[in-house]
Image (cartoon, rainbow, N blue to C red; front, side, top):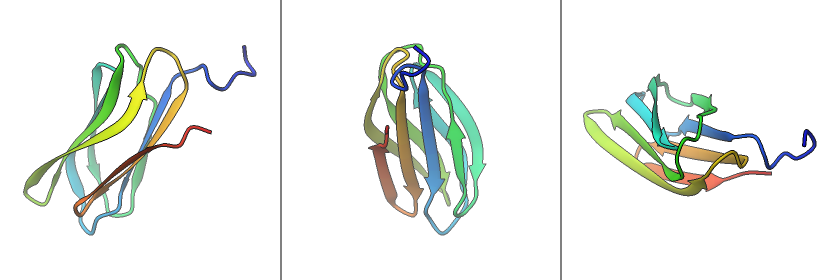
Length: 100
């Protein structure tokens, strides 16, 4: 199965498209929470979370003094290969499945 790219886990890419750093960034996916911490302006982080339970993706963070929740309509299950790309910050919440 080494030639099958549809098997092999999940990738979540989160990019700060706002004008200020984001703090207390967490990504909830697959039955777990991944603590990222801070994400500077224009920075991105690539996560490879272990999927323990079927779920969509939720991104929680603080922008300025405001707590924000960004829910994505991208579904993760088992060991199926899924790549989700999220753009957050400055009032933006875009999450898309970009699996190739």
